[in-house]
Image 1 (spheres, rainbow, N blue to C red):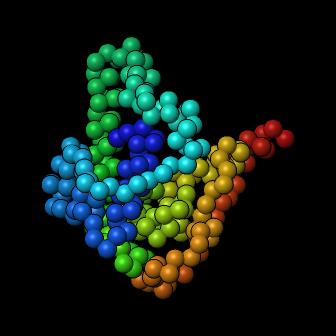
Image 2 (spheres, rainbow, N blue to C red; image 1 turned 30 degrees about the horizontal axis):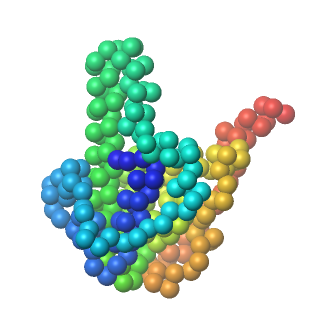
Image 3 (cartoon, rainbow, N blue to C red; image 1 turned 180 degrees about the vertical axis):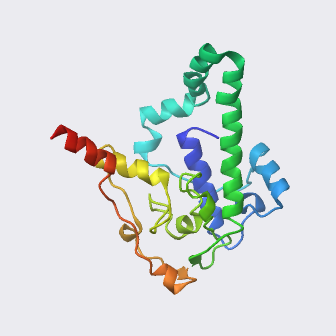
Length: 226
């Protein structure tokens, strides 16, 4: 898809466009599924007057991020070479080519349905696009399918905000926070209130939100050390 900086730019453009009153079909997944799939997986949208995004220096000038951005395609060699040595061409094809097709295609498919179908707890008033939660795909998508939550609280590191909303991506972040590798995590309670955020279902909107918690794996490791 891109390196970390390229993905950041793509996401910011899509987020910005979806918050406007009108949005191009390419950025809102507004076409029929086959056309949208062709667009998203094979095409790029070039704007005559694109918005200007300024990425903070701690990201745009970070040597590690810049290295990954420059060589992100070559990173497949880390997996490709061992797979080829272990199983030859079949392992290489299934472990790299097929895996990438499924991952990128799955990312698009979740994005398509999460912007067109599914449950909504919140509406962002005035926005051209609303996100939807797809419960059946929450686990497989690493939490990405809780997309209505993301549209409501785009600054939240947690996407599965409520109990019962499986979010493996958050489990990893929470574990890394427990061992001190991740800091400054933002949750909905840490974000400024949004006047344009309207609850579609008062009962759903009043659900108890999840919080940072001690990771079971980290708790086990600490117990073993003691």
